[in-house]
Image 1 (cartoon, rainbow, N blue to C red):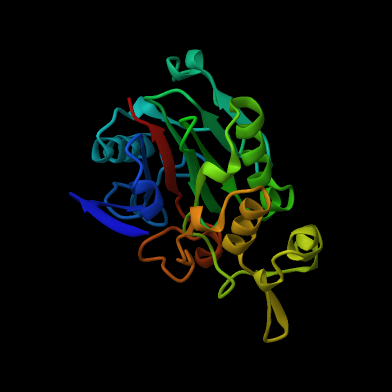
Image 2: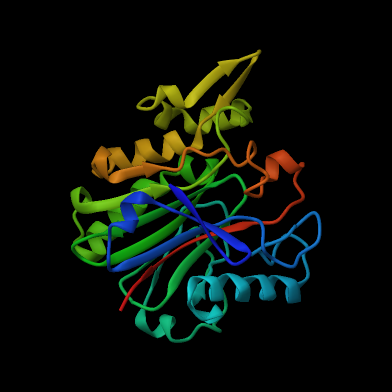
Amino acid sequence: MRFQTIGNITVARFRLLETQADVSHFVSCRAGGVSPPPWDTLNISHTVGDSPARVEKNRSLLARTLGMRTKQLRFCAQRHGTDIWVVSERERICPDEPLREADGMITAQPGVCLTVVVADCAPVLLWSTSKRVAGVFHAGWRGLAGGICEKAVDTMRVLFRAAPYEMIACVGPCIGACCYRVDAQVIEAMEPHLCRTPHALVARGGGFYLDLSAIAAGQLLSAGVPEAHIEEAGVCTSCRQDLFFSHRGSGGRTGRCAAGIAIEG
């Protein structure tokens, strides 16, 4: 992953996806917007108490930085689940329809930027190189416990005949095992996934710490995406609150970054 600053806004991009001519993508950082503390400054979410006018201004600034119109950014109503919205051509050209409840989106339609908002949960970007199908997913511990990454790969395979072995998957900045202390409820929910990625749970100082990125990468690998086609950001959002919003690190009151993917053409 590398960082690119355009004007006042910095975005992160993945090496694997940058090699693909037919797709664009980004993960936004927190600077360059208009929101005051605790949402300072490029908060992209309407659900954290920031004013709607400021959020819309931030979305406009981000879209302009990315070279697109604000209405091309397509959001869903995230619920910490595993529902996936397949964005159709009709939905692509009707951006003002009510948000669908989902924690992931997939499309084969060009010109729409599928976007999720995050502050510690992992954003996961997925691209089928042969079928030109893109997806983005919000993967917190509940979504990962429900297997959202495997469900995403399987949805692309079933609906678009996309083979997992030719997919590219990128796991964005999220809270790491350095900071993410979890309780027995989370450990129990994650137990089936920890069987294949035991290194994702770290015992330290009388507590247990979870690596969301490792769990997500393990699910993608289990779903058939080759290890060489999976890129992890390797950045903890709680450690790097200078760059990203962190729900855990801020005590629960902060903004949200965005991660998005769009098919060119």
